[in-house]
Image (tube, rainbow, N blue to C red; front, side):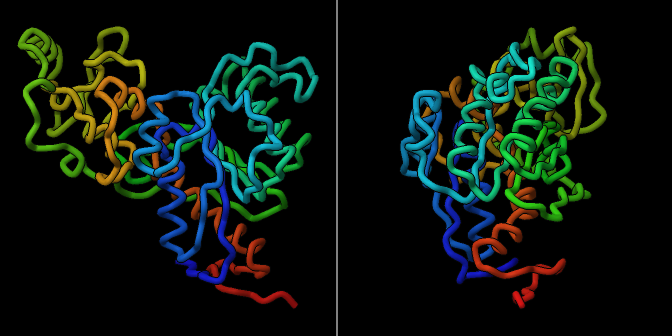
Length: 330
């Protein structure tokens, strides 16, 4: 814990905010370190996600970010964005920002160019790294580094390695306005067991039909319980003491607890690291979509904890050594 209560409030924005995974992580990290913070702007185009965000943060996110001019965005220290991975069909023609117009990454880039925050944390699917033979990702990093002048760090991270019982790989992009000795966190030894995630009193409607139950059990014998059974597109069934990645558009029977029942809304949120205080205000269909689109809270927390000392240095005018203790400027 850094515990720098004299640090000026850290302001941040939450783009493509969904149901607030970035915000929960930020609030927890800042609170744990005794630092005041404020989310000065949030945005998401989905009205159902907006409703969930409003219920939990008492703030209605702005709508379509493509319709909001960058000059209207408040000044901020950090930018958070789990931007959707849309097709980057025009990337690679060597025209800089022109390559990213029409994609949602451009909206991040234009805000960074205008507002110049200290740093940012971006999140996207692992496949972004290899999209279009790597040309898409190369162009994104080139814009951030060469055209916007940020020092950029990249790593594919798995939420399973940071305490959550879900194998969810995401590419994390960290940027800062000056050279820093930033290092991504080392993987944890253990993750929370499913027994601490799963509910015990589950309504009958979550259980599959006898036909599905018998079919699954005839095809697979688990080696551990509790487990999450996963069926891929080819019909192969496997089970693990953790969940495969939640997906917004997956089949209702894509993941089954011990092959018998579907995950409840609260279990879905727990797998993403959301606290039980998170209010569920949408129907179950929307909740499955929202949980499937959410960023794992733990991933953001461990990355932000590593970035925070450098933000404190800039906000407080001090230098922290490797143990996060103060070295005063000469």
